[in-house]
Amino acid sequence: MNKIIVTLIWVVTYSVSIGQFVNPVSWNFELNKIDDEFIKISCIAALDKDWVIYSSKNGEDGPIPTSIHIEKGGVAVESIIEPLPVKKEFDELFDMELLKFKTKAVFIQKIKITGEAKNVMGFIQFMTCNGERCLPPTKVPFSFALNP
Image 1: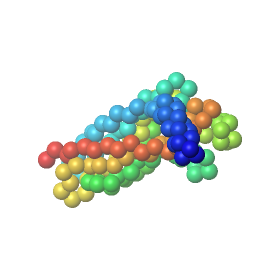
Image 2 (image 1 turned 180 degrees about the vertical axis):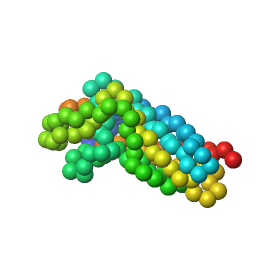
Image 3 (image 1 turned 90 degrees about the horizontal axis):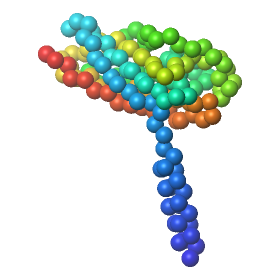
Image 4 (image 1 turned 90 degrees about the vertical axis):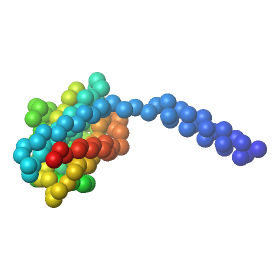
């Protein structure tokens, strides 16, 4: 009887947690060829109302800074470029001044193509919060075919 009750509680809890899944950030990725050796990858985020993404320029003491990781086909060179205006605000969840984006964010990474790579693969890692709660750091993969 105890197994049935525990199983029932687990099923109800699991169903409620699935119903509360939120995905407040949607991503688009663009590749721009600079020359035969370099490309730029633009990671473009659209955020739901009241959600923010943190800048790549924030320190390690607060939320996870946004970062771009290249896993295959190239090596990141230079720092991430953030062309949109960033808001510097006091963040009550982290009790500190932070750089963050609202509604839209763009992160651009210059990449040196390695060898005879046919494609570039990687991911962007980010953290998002809405003033009441934060979602765990999330990795969103991207992949681009490199034309010969």
